[in-house]
Image: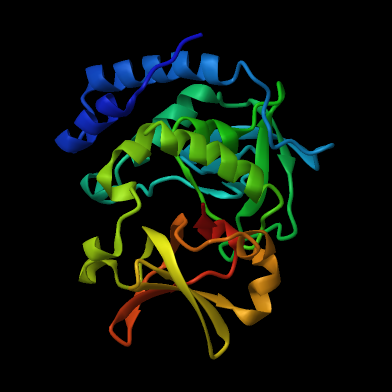
Length: 274
């Protein structure tokens, strides 16, 4: 078994703000070795059957593919760091690594299997799908396992619990983007004005509950408020049935500041991790 912790290489690459040819070669080589080991076990999030088989044209970035028929496919359930194609130096950390990884892992004309969820198209007209190779490797899991993507639910959530488990393992091992401070969950004391109205992750201990208006509020460290809409509370039954007081959690969502306190609204249980 090969076990490689790649975060130091990733960190040096991002610090330099560019990837020199030799660094890119080393990155891809080590990633290839890591993947051989990672995929030795079968994928966990697999449907009983697929909805469509397609052919790949090329890789756009870490979570988007272009097919031979011209369609764009957006991988469901994950987000890879964003590439700024006009100003590459402004790209998010690990965005280029995620794209290079998929370009190495997949080949043009390769056949891929798609599995659809409830919503098949996003607002941009891209096809939303879980994507698998003919040998059964699940691309979403591969990216999460290597720390080149993180989970995020946009309505489609068939595999959200399964994908969340895969992400937590990479997070615990500080693989890939989880080794970079930009992606680590922070305490509320570390939040700044730059975090307003941006998606972020906050870590804290549940110190109380409050029912107010149309929300149930979980209070972290006596100062950060997670609002669960009453109409969505049934989705959180597994979490809310636990004895959460004094439990450490990670909350993710769009952060805002109101009534002199930081808050976020959690409409899906994937936004709260124990």
